[in-house]
Length: 293
Image (cartoon, rainbow, N blue to C red; front, side, top):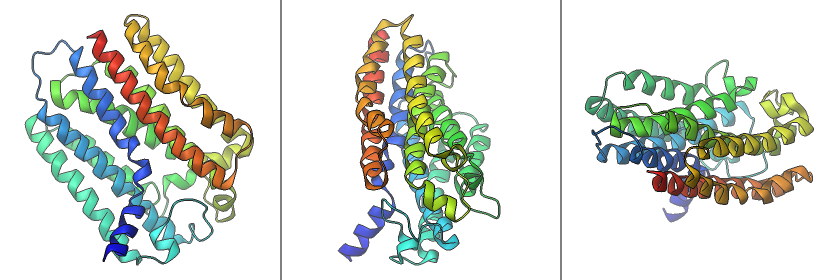
């Protein structure tokens, strides 16, 4: 029983959860500088639950879809339940559906307390999460995964977290979402860089495969640069936001590792460091935004 639970926890890929926590943290901080007099802080907890459930759902859905296609047979990195034979495809599919259901139910409650237009956003989130690697023509196999991550785990998650509290879309939360989205994309980018040979062999045309090893490394570094430029831009009118650079500075180590040609298990360590940079940047950026308010 304990071993089985451990497998499910590993399959949920807890090291990717900073991608779900960061946008809610930053979006919540943006509420403080928003001029809206309406603030339903309890909705922020709902936004966090939706974000975490979606991240876990996508992880299980990818495990299932890649597993039945045989994509994960020779993958380096975290455990894949289906690919390793640890769990049956049916069981993993059910886990993904259960996590999607949690996100859908909580999202429905948030829509009921704000605006029913959130239902449209929710449907798009669920569909995008499943068809990333699911269906006959998964867009993750076409090199479009980074767009999904930037839009839904960056812009939508950050701006949406502010919106469910204030029922307003603020310019600051949108700019902050660019930083969050870039670092979320960096997680996927280094993951795909690690798997570039295996993905290419099975016809999975991720952006890393399309760019090639050198181009994928430049793209990874470029995401950090875009996050840096956006942070500096936000700090023009709110200097305390420069605190976000403290978190971004921790990205120097993984960036150097990628630039120096890290491969295989070295990139697994880079993935962990990238997740650490993402959450530390979210914390320091949020602190800077709070002080600006």
